[in-house]
Amino acid sequence: MAKQRVVVGLSGGVDSAVSAYLLKQQGYEVVGIFMKNWEDDDDSEYCSSRQDWLDAASVADVIGIDVEHVNFAAEYKDRVFAEFLREYQAGRTPNPDILCNAEIKFKAFLDHAMRLGADKIATGHYARVRAVRARDGQPLTEGEVATLPPDQVRYQLLKGVDPGKDQSYFLHRLTQAQLARAIFPVGHLHKREVRRIAAEIGLPNARKKDSTGICFIGERPFREFLQRYLDGTPGPIVDEQGREIGRHVGLSFYTLGQRQGLGIGGVRGRDTDQRGAHAPWFVARKDPATHTLWAVQGHDHPWLQSRWLRAEDVSWIAGAAPAPGAYAAKTRYRQADAACTLELPGSGDGLVLRFAEPQWAVTPGQSAVLYDGEVCLGGGVIHSAEATERPLPAVVRPITRRRVHAR
Image 1 (cartoon, rainbow, N blue to C red):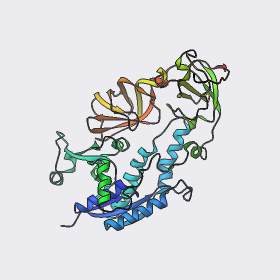
Image 2: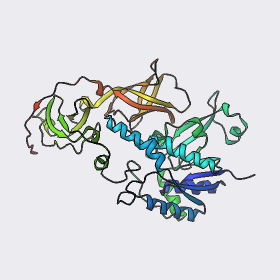
Image 3: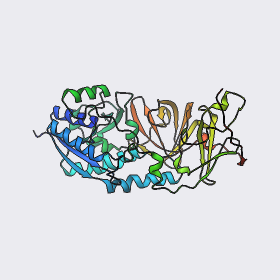
Image 4: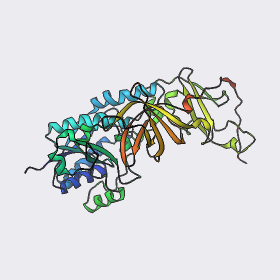
């Protein structure tokens, strides 16, 4: 019997490298693909794609597999980056990594892998796939899956076993067809185990630092990057009473909950005769109609708290919405699961989540992802929340800027 062919996305990082090694140990025919998704300023100090390719090629040599360099930059710019810019121009804060997974890693890459004769594709994501019987949700073995008609099998996306590395949030837009072809070899491991395996087999990237931030931006300053593509319209920064306390360089360059880069640390806010005078400022609202940025003082300010949100552009992994009721959700990556109730409005494809406890800085453009225990059900793009729907006071004259000295 011929070995199953699995095409692995080798990023140059340790997670995908160990994924390829584990698959080969399990008896698969493994082929590596290095995806180049970004070409602009490829030779700059911030772009690591050349080094990543060298690392991927070195890993393939150690493991003993072939690796191919494939350029998806055109698809990425059209399907992901263009939408990224549109969202920022509209005053929202998108999550391009979610769209990249749905449109590039599990679409363009999947299509390319199928042309290479792949039975499955694999990535280094910390998540798991489970096959279950469609009629009753009972888990199935690989042998049972092979004997059942496709319409009798459903695939679930599960959280990664390592709670600190779980990446199911970024994969919540995957479909049944995509999950049916996907393997996540390190999803059942903790990160420390992955690095231990990499060191034991002598992988050259065993101690390589994990990549952070948005994939195509790298370590560069985020605002500096956006200013190359978006025109900023300056405007006032105002406090909760409508008083101007500073100026911003363009709403696109700020996000709800942001603390750094506001330039208003020396302005007295509410409760100026109390300890609250020295509390940090946070972005609380953006008003594109008037180019106004609203800031409040203190992490727990009511303007940063929401007990409900509305989401649109909803995607359900099972292919249909779950029944309304009690679940858990994340409104941003690395957030702890928050108990909530799912409501499904009668019209459109949206959802409403009502939380048992207020959620901090719920941000339009980000994703709300729903969970039933360890099973990721899907989610949608946040459209609005309780805090973003509060009526705003009128903007009044600027207040005097004063230097505040710590006592």
